[in-house]
Image (tube, rainbow, N blue to C red; front, side, top):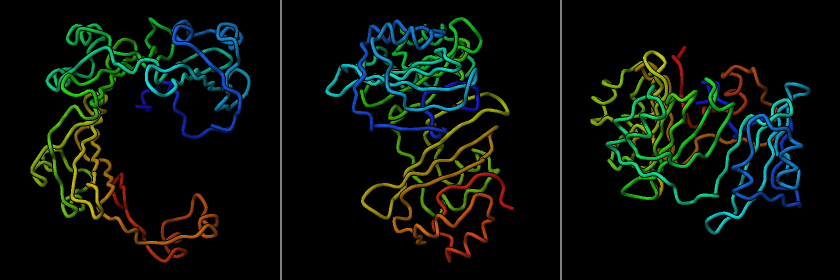
Length: 302
């Protein structure tokens, strides 16, 4: 989803990062979080909340400086809520929260989920579902074409099923579900290995015998991205999971977890530190003496 230009609060790598080490607790209420607006300065946020928050991520300088501030709040459940505010150039550009609302406002079933199409406007989705759901993150200026909203719903049959819709400029850009599709779609290790980059979904379905569970979808036409999940018999106590990613109807990547519980190759810290970005694969294999487990592949071999 990141490829669509949405500014998200989950940053995997930055120039400066620290988490969990600050002894000071910076608190925020649900009402204060709701009042924070895109474009506010950090001084305005600090004045409203009463503290500057914990800087968990920072990068860049001047007008391109980027910062994420975290606060904790009293959650609706047994654990604390966490609110994250993102700033670029000293101004709020996004906010997200987890835990203030543990009861998701809207319900959805698999038929409704399958009916909703990428490209629908937000009002059409709301009309079908009868409500907004929980707005768990916002980025950009409301009313603009770059305004990003993530809304979550829970399954009508199970509270453990979670559905997310991402709207950009009021248009549905992506959708994902966990637990809503209760079908069982199985795959063997041999079938997983046989899947080739470039295959169509019809070829995959013919090989495996089922269409799989579509857990996420974004874009349309040649840029349509679909992720399909299957389960398999793992080598350990739990099932294996295989994920196949399609772009424009063709397989571009595949990954698995659980088919091989025992990792084939070994490595020590000295070897790890010796290996440099930019090395070719044969040089890495020569140092380590083997391939290890191939758990994901993307692109065309060779």
